[in-house]
Length: 376
Image (tube, rainbow, N blue to C red; front, side, top):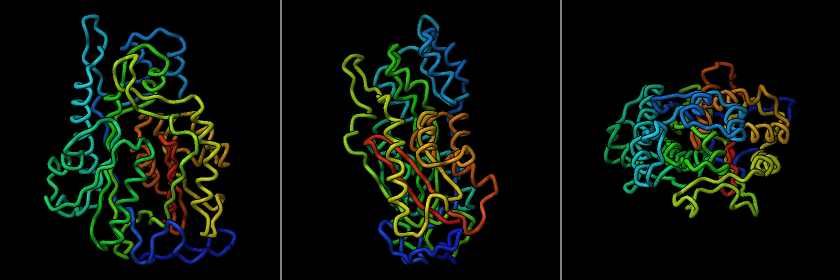
């Protein structure tokens, strides 16, 4: 049976739900009961990518080699007459998104269902999250068909929200689960980030090309009051939009290169770090918990500078961010799927104890921070 959060360490009482953004009643709080991940078939070290693309600019090489990333899974463009990856048309990039996002998303969902011991027929609601391309019918319909989910499965597509969107999708699935006790909802975040790459030699695109990888993650939720698996129970969710930061992270049309491209303002790490306290404190407001009561942090692997800023501003240790750092090292930034990669590593580690508290934290365009409070 699911229980209210136990007394935090130090004996301070928690407030009784409901609190703003919380799930109630206690017996129907959604629980994350299965996880699965997948990546593109080919993986490359940062040094290998520099050689493949023939990059000699010292500033760009420094971006690749000093960002806390060792390797990433990517679907590279076909080669041109010079033997280097050539620039692709917008149509080719969209076709790659369709192919890769469906392939990785389906693989992550199958892995998630296997982790849970469930089958496609058990899924009653599917949320598909992506930012790396636009499809109509959406990614949810294509994954439904590819995996063989029932045609009666409810669907929702979360498109264009960026790296924070995994928690936005989780919020939707959690709300649906709470309204349908005992039924299984799944969230699939599938990001073919290489389908958003532009090769033009500019620092704007070099920053992006040095950071992102192709990957997908899936999470299964159920609210049935049984606590049937050792997964986190979602207690509360909150959002925080940073004022006056709308254009600091964006994916839009760049007339200079006649293509869509992603832009990251150099001040993004400092903006995120400066507002992270507000986002997390708002999440914990009314729960009786402080940041020091949180045993486990599942954070989006947004980049080395972002993680450094979060560590300083939230008073976290390298141990707190160990899984986020290792995901960044092994996969780069896989956008909305990143935090679920970290959550999977936390669960596989086997150090979570009943009664522990956790915070999931994602950030992305808007600039937006999403946070979730969980208990184990």
